[in-house]
Image (cartoon, rainbow, N blue to C red; front, side, top):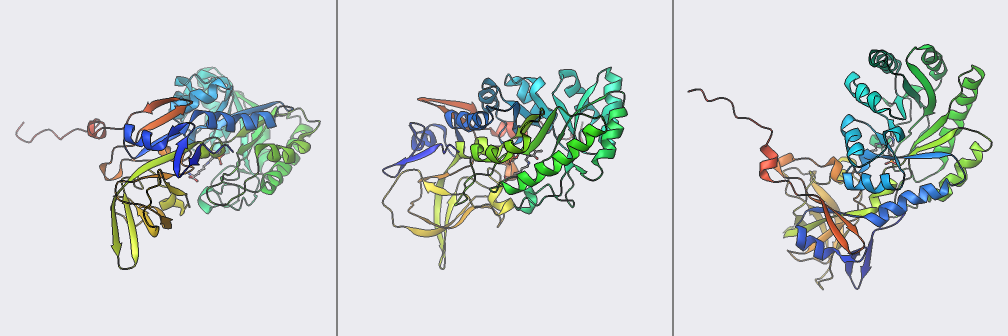
Length: 419
Ligand code: LLP
């Protein structure tokens, strides 16, 4: 996948812009994305699927900034959403609702109504109870809901337990062994139009074998359904490939599709994919500034101005993310834990890293374009960071830094007791 950042004489650049210039102009912490890297990563999937009827639905949850969605919408992307908030972002960005698939285990009737009104491509339904509510909701709107059942193929994705979703013990989807019965019920419902099947077995997969195993199981089901006179129009194989954070060697979309497409040879179903991380992770970074250097005995800390509220992946998943100095400064290298200002021991970005740094230096957290800003919060009443999109020689602020006023704008004092 396209790595947005390059190094020249120890100075880091995104496209042709030095990251140090962005850090000084916009302040830190901040997120910076490369438009061309996002586009290239999307086009890699599109090119790999040139020979097959397909719909690539970018998983909005990975990075939902409307400028990112706009970039992808212009390339013809569809979108995989998990909330009405994401749906409204897609619309704002110029995305086509007819290319939207709606995932998620807990859609409410009001979510369903909005998506029905807009005529989305399909609902990825995760339980029989959801199917019933969707049928009733569609009936009350006088509409019909296009449905794909998310089945759980019981495949071990061999990724972090928090982002592994395709095992029987996970909350997601319908047991593949029970799916045929649920399809038969769905086919009889007055306001349900059965159109597809889908699964999502996990994220940050760097091995193709679990994807292949899941698709093989789906195809057995699809053929059984055809015999029951329930033909499907699409097969959705869920999220995309993992990315390189450290030394992982993820396959390219081309290699991934070279393993998948032979299984679909001669079949008419459209292939749907929901990649998120592999489109945006390596297209973005987070910049932060060293505030203080501190030693406790033989442990060195670099205390930076970004915290777990800005980037939670290391704290939440023990994720290893690369961190580099933005500009060479000639300082002596030492081992540091890079930690933030939040009052929690879990507030770290990186541990035991060799860095040549002084207070005031900018650091770049690599591969932070997916599951970065979107998972940020205001914990410790920290305003959220700005997002910047670099496009060739242009640098655009695509979300401004929050202000203290933003932090409290929805809150109210209690009426005063004196009246
Ligand atoms: N489709 C569904 C139904 C999903 O649940 C997900 C991700 C995707 C697609 C996109 O998967 P991707 O192509 O990005 O692997 N916050 C975690 C990752 C959570 C992924 C959740 N589902 C992290 O930072 O690693």
